[in-house]
Image 1 (cartoon, rainbow, N blue to C red):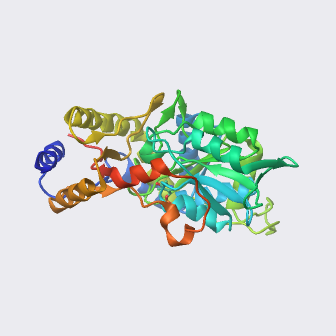
Image 2: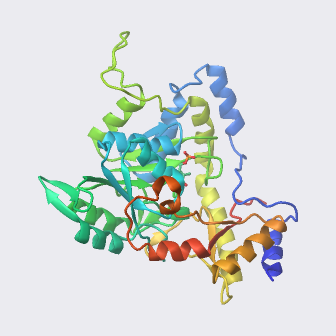
Image 3: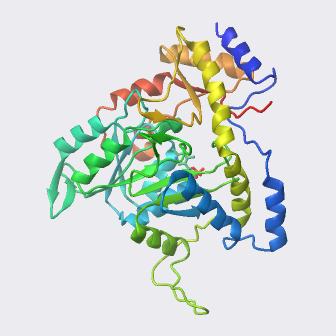
Amino acid sequence: MYKHIISFIQERFDTESFIPLHEPKFAGNEKHYLNECIDSTFVSYLGKFVTEFEDQIKEFTQAKHALAIVNGTMALHIALVADGVQENDEVLTQALTFVATTNAISYQLAKCVFIDVDKETMGLSPDALRAFLEENAEMINGFCINKKSGRRIKACMPMHTFGHPCRIDEVVEICDTYNISVIEDSAESLGSFYKGKHTGTFGKVGVFSFNGNKTITCGGGGIVITNDDAIATRLKHLSTTAKVPHQWNYVHDEVGYNYRLPNLNAALAVAQMERLSDFLDNKRTLVAEYREFFENGAIKFFIEPKNARSNYWLNAVILDSRKERDAFLKQTNDAGVMTRPIWELMSNLQMYKNCQTDSLVNSKWLRDRVVNIPSSVRFG
Ligand SMILES: *Cc1c(COP(=O)(O)O)cnc(C)c1O
């Protein structure tokens, strides 16, 4: 039934053997910089590649500060710590996300509250967020309190699903009126812009991931960006064991973390950043081919939302029903064309099944129908 799709993808990737969802590409200065890094002996978190990587990210996103972190999950965690999220605080987020988002919230012993997404973006819906706060929130001494739980709603963590920006400006505007900090999980959206501004620069802090399956990779890595000087200082202090700067003394003024990215990984990151624009262009040529192929068919290709320029990290299609989705998954994977369903809703995982949610109607609808299809950069 899906034979024509399978052969189309095999032609696109010029192979009939296994086609992964997203594979890394190393065709630039990666080996050169790695050797240079080893020769320098600066393989840990001190070294010129870390600084260079941070500068590249600042330049690309136009953020004022960037700090390289061991991976995206820890970057989300340190952002919550720096923002002052504490045990029993609540963090509003989407149920339709990768588990790293909610793991970071749980490391801080805070509670997740799940808000619905928009069908057009697959990211946090400002309409659902507004409705939830109007029904559940009251301001007490400047803090936003959840009337149902009595807990403080400290932060909101929207996620830009598969690199498609959510309506982040509206999310920030709503959160501002309730004194809720916005920490953008932009792990998937390096290279994605909303209304001309890079994702991750709308909220108080934005986070990117450089895991092996992301648009560009440094093996494992993350970065936090912010325009807030005080938060930037706090992030640096907390991520480097909270050591009080001094030429030789080892004094730490709170419990800190060892979360900085090693120079070795940064060497890889710098080489990958040099190729980012090429990669994004290359991915868009595949998107154009997919769009044309799926046009007018029964299966819908997911197109970047209004006002957005997406990186199309993982391409997505929408099937008619859960039954068709399962048939599609089976046939494509059997043929060696890797596809996978969008995540199970976090609110259905046993760790989060007691968390407060809204109706999650769009989240459930998308959960049953969305499938990712091969999205790697192709050279040739
Ligand atoms: C990849 C990803 C992260 C971070 O992942 P790491 O593997 O820890 O770098 C966080 N959130 C989302 C939504 C992701 O896709």
